[in-house]
Image (tube, rainbow, N blue to C red):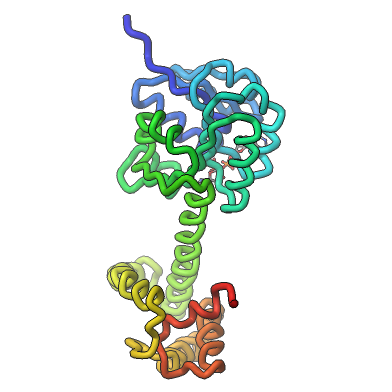
Length: 291
Ligand code: FVH
């Protein structure tokens, strides 16, 4: 009889930690799991996972230590008391943190002789192990290479660099685009609902156009990287008229145009600075740090 390969420990069995542990079991491997509040491991244990009563006990299983907790503070609350037991071990932290928090954890790990890899999950729990799931990693390249077989069970895995903050930087920067996009979609849905049109019908029309628009990101990026705003595809002056028309239409429909107002404020900032004839993408100058 061949024993199943062991995949280390998973600390945290929330929606995401549970999905990660499940994918390991689905691949015919075993894993030791721990959760602060008992009672979340039963389903995993019935499929072969070992449950540890404490996070410290979970480390006794050996192998990499995967951490998927609520936030940065909960990671420290869990790992700080275990620092000495973790010396010489590999920690892969999949908890969402800011880049500065990831770098802080990497520094903490280095001071305690722990190899640290930070992970940023670009997926929802049901996507884990399926197509479209992507996890960005940064920090220890050797931890990434050594445990790649496990990481690849969850998603497409990419190593973004030795700076532990990079995975989180990309993650949060991408999400910074996603949330306004969804707010804009919902703004549009509220507008058409005022005419008795359901959001589902609106989605059929909005999704193809908005998807096609994202194909222009490389062009936008080229404009921004080169700071070549002088020959606009859409000038700031022109864009302000378009945005104000959308806001006026929204108010006519008794819909709050706040998502569009946010963009209009950025556009006005550049117009007020004397750049109305230049390209819309110049609004990035309102956003990034000023010299
Ligand atoms: N769920 C998602 O769609 C997103 C996708 C992108 C990445 N995120 C991040 O993944 C981390 C975990 O998210 P989650 O969905 O598993 O979150 P919850 O279901 O709320 O579970 C949280 C777990 O954290 C444990 N926990 C909370 N505080 C502490 C603490 N002080 N000490 C130890 N453990 C703690 C909690 O335990 P319990 O409440 O059951 O006792 C859960 O296991 C997160 O960073 C997302 O941003 C997921």
